[in-house]
Image 1 (cartoon, protein in one colour):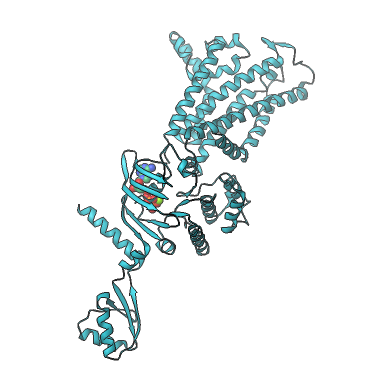
Image 2 (cartoon, helix red, strand yellow):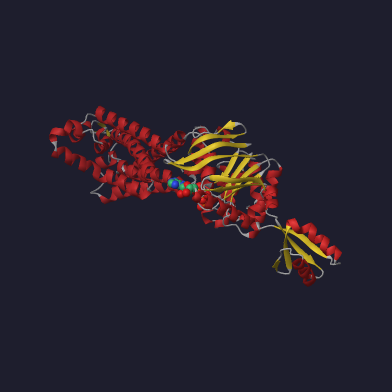
Length: 253
Length: 295
Ligand SMILES: Nc1ncnc2c1ncn2[C@@H]1O[C@H](COP(=O)(O)OP(=O)(O)OP(=O)(O)O)[C@@H](O)[C@H]1O
Ligand SMILES: [Mg+2]
């Protein structure tokens, strides 16, 4: 496993994608900062839209990181050099998750810089905001984002293993992030009798990003308690990883 | 070294390789030859534990299975297309698998890739990529090297170089299993021929034997060809003309030499005329096809 991790890290870090991802994140956060009606506490607490932007970047990168093995004919060599396809799959997954953490750290630093740049000392990190203070809310939002990153990465891995079409996986992933939650809310309001079941649907899991920081507001949207939505995410994550790993093990080249 | 026993390979439910058995000994260079779709690539993938199969495959007495590739630690391979990450330089691609830097640099200079090995492999030509693929297969002093169509896209000069390197490694005990369509290329390097059609091995022979079988005819040249021709037809010996030679049957060769001697015609040249290696292969494959269709 250690060797798999080393190889995957080597491959990942020698691409341009990780740097491009970081630059894209900063630019998109900048876009959030200047496009709205001005920088307020809410925008700072959300890390200038970091949750959404990190998720989008992670979908693209994770799918590509698996797809490249098929595109470059390296999959046969990768498989024969290793006895365990599961280890290859998990090594790739871990490297990508590690990168997700790096993106979140970048978003924290960038948020701090942007806050000083755009509003100076107007808001204090320690001033009360939502259920906590400004910095606490930011961290809760990013923890929520981290959970959803695990969800979306494990889903993207499963999907790319299944359909081996990178643009399609990226497209589906983006659709889920942009349209998934309104669609989920729409069907729940359409079939309100079924809410006890429908609230567990995978599209609903995205609310974990906001519910960590604003449990009371978002519990009414997701119909799940904070504990439940975290649990739901974990169950989906484990499920996606298990099924994806199993499908990957069945791959023949 | 490599031992294959009653191997059947399945793709989906279809049996692609049918009850194949053969061995590759240390230092031997086995040519896997057969028409498109015969199953050459599939055999190689099976040896590398990449397909569903029955039967036994072992490398140095250690079994290869789909889920245990420990026996493949010292097996190098190039399957179909070179496995290259375009965003890495040639050297970085090698580093990904290399266990010994000196050996890696040795392989690079053997294949004369020093000039461009530090450039991103995205910009490599077809032949440069192919060479890099061969280099990856030769890393870490392998016991067995499996090369699928290794001469693809290589110019004459590089082909000769690769042939030389293969012989060099074989001389040190590395075993090779190589497939190719360009028979002439393999003929010059292989020690054994493995002929395969429709998933079955129809010939498994050392190359020397293979050549002898086809030498049923001799080419004859004398210092007086018109007289020779007259002499042989007078004696009802069947001959054929080819260029400025007469082609005779091997069975007649002693008789003919006697006639020539008695008639004071001097023998200039008498050499075996096999079918060319390529012709022999084609006729064997044809034969097999006719048989299997007749069944
Ligand atoms: N993934 C696959 N699905 C279905 N059939 C396959 C698959 N791969 C190979 N085959 C079949 O297996 C047979 C052997 O294919 P293989 O690629 O081993 O031939 P080959 O001898 O390497 O041919 P070539 O000289 O063209 O490279 C062919 O009939 C082919 O149609
Ligand atoms: Mg082939």
